[in-house]
Every structure is written in C-alpha cells, then in structure tokens.
Image 1 (tube, rainbow, N blue to C red):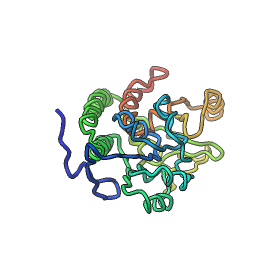
Image 2: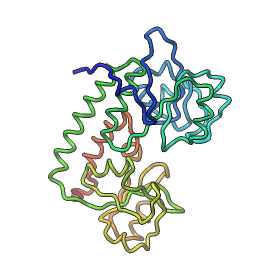
Image 3: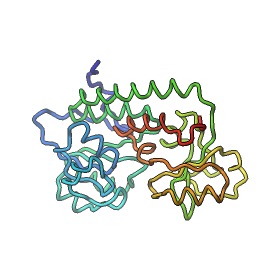
Image 4: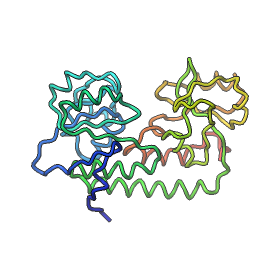
Length: 275
C-alpha cells in the first residue's frame, strides 16, 4: 500500500522541516553523498541532479552526465555556486559541517541525512520521496526493503552469533565501532562487531591487542580502502584466523543499495560454515 506524505516524512536528521516541491517547480539538486546520488536516480530524479562528488559512481551511465564538484569533504564551493542548486543533500558522517554551512549561505534547501541502522533507510526513502514529490517510488523501495528484510531476519534467528572484525583501512589498520551503520548491518546476520577500547567511531587498532583473540573471523572491505585477494591471503597467513573479502558498497551504502546489501549479507557464506 502506498503511503501519503506526512509531516514526519519531511523532517531531516538535523531537525529541519522541509516542504514538498510543487509539480511545476524547477529543482536543481547537488548531492554530496554517493549512496544518495544512486537513491535519487532510483527515485527518477536524475534529470534534477546538477552536481555530484567524484565518488558518486552509480548508476554509471547516468552519473557520467552529471558534473563533478569535488569529493565528499573537499568540494568546490564556487563550482557549486555556479550550478545554482535549489537543494543540497548531505550526510552527517560523510560531509564536513563548515563546508555545509558555507553552501547553506546560497543554497535554499539543505537536506541532512544520518541513517544509523538499516531500518533507518525506510525514513530516508520517505524523506526524499516526500520532499521531491516522488512518494510512490519511495514506498515501492520501502516494500522491496521489507521483503528482503523479512528473509534476512527469519534466517538469522537460527544462526549462532559470531564476533567479527570489519577492516576499512590499513597503515594504520582501522575498523568501525558498534554504533555505525556497518556494524548494525552485520548484526542483522548475528555477526557482532569487535569492540575497541577507543571511543572513536572509526578506531585504529593493533593486531597484538589481546582482545582480538575473541574474534571468530575478519572481514576486509573493498572500500574505502581497496582491499584485494592478495591482502586477504597475506593477512590470513599472519593472524591464523579466517579472513574474507567483502563488498564494501553492499555493507556500507545506505539508500536503495541497502536493498541489495541485505540480500548480499543473507547470501554471504564463503566457506559454508560461518553460520
């Protein structure tokens, strides 16, 4: 069933109340969040996108036509100004607040996002769907999400919990804290992310840390560091624990990619005995 827009669906992660655009209104969107550029395209808003980061790479054939405005943190302010956007899409973790504050001086509508758990995607779909008058498409994504979620959670209930270490960088080695979106995704598979003594959301760690002995297996993500099969083999020889390479986009990208991510997570079983 298709939901109608509500006031709750128009409140972003910063607490700003937005309005639904009129059907005749000209919309020019700059998106500084790779996964949300993909989501906007999946909502049929590609013709309204006038700027994106160099990391906004999906869907490939569509984004190639959209001008780049820098990275997620080092954006070209003047280039964005010349694009005359009406809306800016940002994320609390991925974009720098001082940069967003500068852009807010000349962009009328700044939409702030911050999904923490996989199910936060439902509110995210509805937020963008309500603002940009594409609620029907947003509700279809919600239904697809719920379908995959039901399959994952039904299967997870029968699985034995494992402790994992999800690696996002090396030199120095870095992981994620349990309050991140990635860790919350893993938890849906009954995989509990190892907890660092650091309070950082993306802590540095040392392989000599005795607490790592409790880890059942290690996951090397293909992003943001481009871990490869050679990294996996070398690390497994070093630490004598199972090490697996995982698709970082599937486990860290929220938005419409999360639907595929949940399916990927449910199916991931490289050696048939992880559970």
